[in-house]
Image (tube, rainbow, N blue to C red; front, side, top):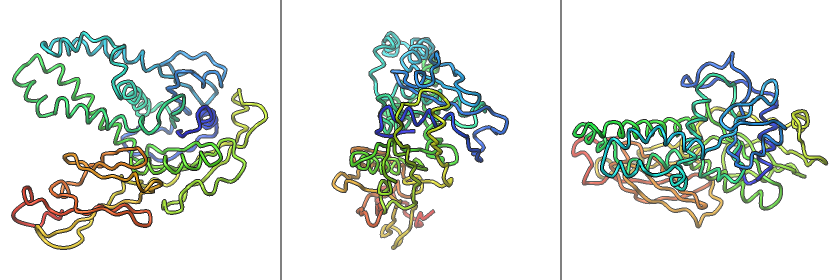
Length: 387
């Protein structure tokens, strides 16, 4: 559950967690959940609003029952950082040299590094998701969290790792200097975790976003931008919840977005819900939606015209564009950098397009199209490389 709704997001997430659960088929990477427990509500809120809403005493890092079919897991990412760094210090210090100096850094100093705490949270959420204990996990992205930044952390950290210590250098260094093997193994595992979590986030049979937004013009504009960012990141969005709404919210979803999104209105109550029973009376039911890839995760490649070095290819996907002036494209290695509404996302290019340069781009009727032409310096001399 994410959105610009502040504390309202936390309340809606709590209501969803204790409401009726819906069963669905999930991909093989996730264990069968037919005999699993109920719903796990995960929150990173430092103010611990969820435990106050439920009226329970919560120990961060430990699931606590809030009803017969729901548990609450509050994560203290700073404490998780200290625990993880204590484990990593040994292998890193053995590498000697600069690595030994890095090992002397305190966890409090690492807390300011972009993505470190959030990545630890994602690893814990991933571990709970694959444990087979829960039918459904609701992640509450409120309490001062930037939801789009949080969703982009696995890709961000993976990019940092590859730039700071590329995989081919890790393998070569570990082979030449055995004391580097421990540190290289730690980084390899973290890189694998990043790839695993990023894959789960864009798999619509596993992860589906529900946007919670306030009513009014501010909520409408924020919703349009957040929906565009989620599509850019390839994350499937299944519905919008208008918190304390007084209308049906029909104009919250841009008409040119493509698939329609159901809108649920949570009307304002005279007394703030503070019990499980009161939360259930809100009657918020969020749909799962069809398990179809969204946005950049559903990008298609077409061979438009020409042969050999004269070939033209097109990469396209459905993409809302609430702020046309903010659209910008760039290239970094095998990735296409797309920026819109203050969000930059790396779209990994299919193999045939990695040997091409960008020819031009256009946005028309809700579809972003980028055309490519072969780069003579790296294009194969024989064959068209259309596969």
